[in-house]
Length: 139
Image (tube, rainbow, N blue to C red; front, side, top):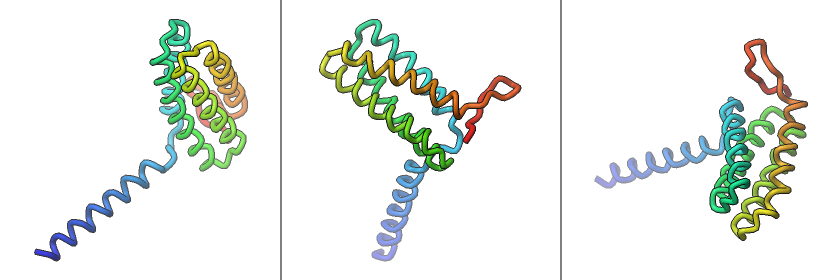
């Protein structure tokens, strides 16, 4: 009976370790992450226009996670400038979230604008449009 309990415990630890490692692995396809960034950024803009501080904070928090995922992808691709863009956007999203939680949406507007501008700057360097009108990452 004791051997079975130990075996079950070992299996549970192995499953936990595999789950944690899988969550930390960078995405292998950037497209879903970027599509989610675009949708969330658009939602953020609309929530700022409607002065919805709670949703602005939630959008910014989601963007932080998405840009962290993107930074992992860029790091795996050895594109340091893209990593820097993504890390800067993690910081900007944090600034937006902090301002929104303080109900100071005027202070959230500047970093939100900077975030959107930085997307274009990175796309100009690292996004290539394919003949079928989809995009791929260009290292």
